[in-house]
Amino acid sequence: MTKQTEMNSIAIFSAEYAESGYLKCTYPSHISDTYDHLIPSIIDINVLNKRFDKYGTPFQLKEYHLPDHLAFITHTTNPKSPILIIWIPKNVVEKHNELPVGMLQLDSFGNALVANECICEMFNETEQEFLGRNWCRFFDSETIKQLAELANGKSAERKFSLDLDVVTELGKPLSLKLDASTIGLSFSPDGVLLLFSDLTAERRHSQLIESLATHDQLTQLLNRRAFLNKIEQMDKISFCRSLMIFIDVDKFKLINDRHGHEVGDQVLKIISKRLDESKRFTDVLGRMGGDEFALCLPLVSDLNHVENIAKKFARSVNGPAVINGIRIEISISLGLAWAPRSLVGDGISRSDAISLMLDQADKAMYFAKNHRPNDDFVIFDHKLNDKIQKVNNCIDELRFVVENDLLTCHFQAICDTQSKIVAVEALGRFLKPLKYHASIQDLIETSLESQYGKQLLDQLTSQALEHFVLLHNKDPDLQLNINIDVLQLQHESFSSDFKNLCLLHSLPLSIMTIEITEVCLEKVPKNVKKNLNRLIEAGCKISMDDFGIGYSNLQRLLSYNFHQLKIDHYFIKNATSSSRHYAALKAMVAIGRSLNQVVLAEGIETKEQRYICQEVGIDLLQGFLLSIPCRAQEMIKKL
Image (tube, rainbow, N blue to C red):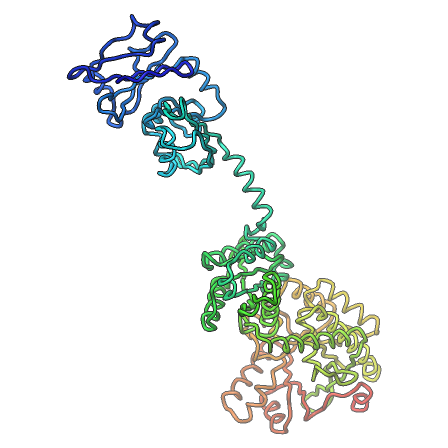
């Protein structure tokens, strides 16, 4: 009827009802023989009930302490033996506190009797807050069930280990290793000893190492290798219907050059955040390197849905950002490619299929970035290969022209109202017809989208000055209008390079008029204005080309010391048939006059157009009616 056990110097006592309100006590022999005079034979249950809290939390029963032992009392689930008193030697408790790991000791009913100092520090709790069933609040129901079965002998195992992730009452996350083992005989255990090792720091260190290996440190996105591995692990159905998006930041090099790499890094972080906030949970996002990102979206197949996805990502990223007080316009170009089911058939591996999709998406992005300026994205199809091949052919031809110096220069006359040639405009021409470029303007446009842009423009400038020497020798007062692009002007050394080139050909700067278009001035790097001012100080004149069709505004006219206003032929052509265009033409002439600028009209093709220009007070005329572009040798005859 009573249970007596002795194990590891721990004495356990239980009692059963002797009569109403009292418990009859029987003790293990080594306790009763030694401490018979100190322990009672009956216990008043009413007194004990007052000592228990509503959870039945064990407590130290000080009146039952024995020499060198602490007494703990707890409830049982047996109605006939409702209490359990356990004596634990003081030196055992002290040793528990010396353990470098957390420890809980449970009785066979799952009540915690002892919590050492280490576990209290881990959870920032007092010992009393662990006792009884209080410890359960830190663990999930499955763990509690396993421990209860271990404690009451229902488990086939005497011990087990598991890893736990718990959160303390103060919200502190802990990564723990739990080792649980029974106390006493396997068929009749007297409780469970729980040991907790704190692996939080080790786990964080491991996670940090893993993060360094799999994540880009600037943006915290997956790096290229981890991105590809993640797609490799995608299930077959999801991958067969996946969409690959390749993303490139527009004009990122310009942002770095203008504002520095610190601002460039912040732009990449902003783009990463915007992309991450826009994707689905199942989408895989990574930084591929530099200013390139990639997204893989599983289970996408509908073409209309694909277009909506691309527009959503473009809208989410495109837009201004203020970094260090600088307003940066952010925009991206996207290329899309999806995986047909045949890609993952027996004939091609998953890794090869991923590489093919990335390559196709990259090609589509390149085409969107360089040849579809009004579209944020392009969806890859096999016709795109032909378009890309054409682009590559154009670039190859451009390289051939630049490397072999296959350019020359023609001149078109600029006349005063009396038809006297007072200036010529230098116009680039091919030495022989090209296969993929119909005009010099086509070649220039190709060059501006490639690495050969400045090299081609510098060659055209050099050709113009070299061929103009013949005309200058014939008429030293003849002015030269020469087109200069912002790509040249943004280089800090351009003004000194241009002056040296003129000096090389013995051409005075006072006869030079540099034509720049309004489009060039839309977003001007600081070096452009600096170079223009230096050239003006050296004696050059500046002309605003294509006036009226670009981004004309009075502020821009006043910001630069223009000497000449060159009105676009659109207004000349339409002024003969539209009173509104005629009025606009007069207004532009009036603006030029008020700013003390010489007004030049280009594109004069009929006598009527010439008459109207003279009528509104235009100073200089240029067009096929007066002169077609020709070689320097032919122009000499007209001077």
